[in-house]
Length: 462
Image 1 (cartoon, rainbow, N blue to C red):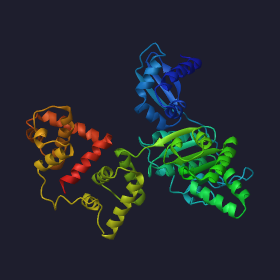
Image 2: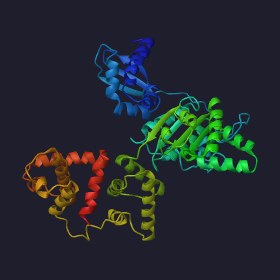
Image 3: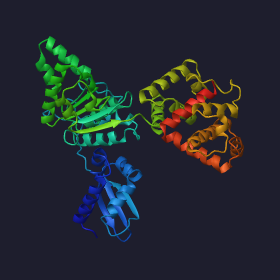
Image 4: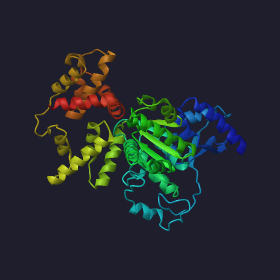
């Protein structure tokens, strides 16, 4: 049996290797909370314990090989299997009190479940019941930010402070920011939470100056235990606002109060903002959220459909997810419009309605598309002649276009593999099968190829 001291030493040495190969945010949020629970040299198996099923899943799917290799470098045998377990932490049974209860307030007898059920928008905290983790979809675009948020929730003011989240419009920054507030209020009932936009901060500062009541302003913004500030980029160019925010930030930070900020750009790209503020924004953990990929857009649409109590087929969800690739807000807006249209016309949300909504004429009203039309559009897209697509040349620049042509001949016309092979210069059916499989995978993982295919499909039916 390996001693506890050895387990700790082995894992710490492995972490030193892992740290060199992953980013700081990934290391801190995924590997730091993980420990070796047991090593079985005879079976060549290891059990790693971590803090959540989400982190365990990430370790198993994304970092398994890296973890295995780092551990094998510390052991005298090859590892057959790594299992992941969740640490069971004892939670204090403390009833949830008011969000802004003082430390001297007696705990409320109301249960967290009943508070959650009755929760409404609270102007004192700025939190909206809509933006919780129950409605937050996690995917490749935001998984590191989500994992880091769990660290903030567990140890507000200590884990990552400040926590700076940046990303484009509609990628879920506000949702994550507010979800952090809701979760901290649930797990730490005595904490005072305050969510505000930088516009709120600016307007209240101006109002306090006008009414000569800056003491009240300072009391509001310097008292919370958790300060959630949205769209901080809008203080750029506002010198007095920056001055006051600098002192607010310092007051909270020195008192070890948690600060979480969002922006549409990196801290160092916010101009003009004082260097002393930028350095403070970058003093904690900075993580970006990317636009959702195809799988995440599908998950978002399913979640939004459930919340709206509408049923959508898989083909409808896939079509919308393929067509809207920009952000979550646009996805939700399109779905809301579709629901409104279907209800006003008493019509089911089917693929025909969705295609008409997005301006693509139904195939039933369109003359049957020919293979020649598909080859022509693909050729124009890639600036190639149709004869090149159907020729014998195997040049690399032709491969992608030819594969997409094969994929569309299969998807749009349903032609047999052998027939597609004949159209594309007498190629074997296994070659066509390989091309279809390759583009299928690329459609799900490569945004550029997905855009090209969607644009080609739209052009084919114009």
